[in-house]
Image (cartoon, rainbow, N blue to C red; front, side, top):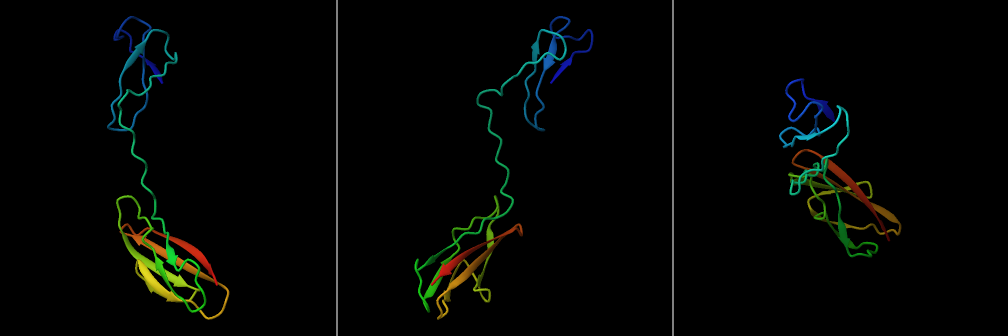
Length: 144
């Protein structure tokens, strides 16, 4: 972005142009003057050593879990561990809510559920919630 100086206030000689970049509030910006008519282009890279902008916060937590035994069978007591879940930046997980086969529920970071006696596919669903009230859901299918 280029803008000419008001007449009589030029930094060097008539025709110099201030070239700058719009920066976020609170950041520093250097002024650079280049000879030439208003509107002439000039790119100024950020100074070396300028701190990187922080990554935007993660908008919600991420639910994740594992279970043992890795290859369960009918009537096995399976342990589900939601400690791999991650809260939103700056938050803490406050709830781990589980739903098994669409009907059995449990609460807690680590829970157990006894598999049904029939062979088939059974969903294990984890919903995590953090201190900001944000939540995420993930489902894994156990095939026995």
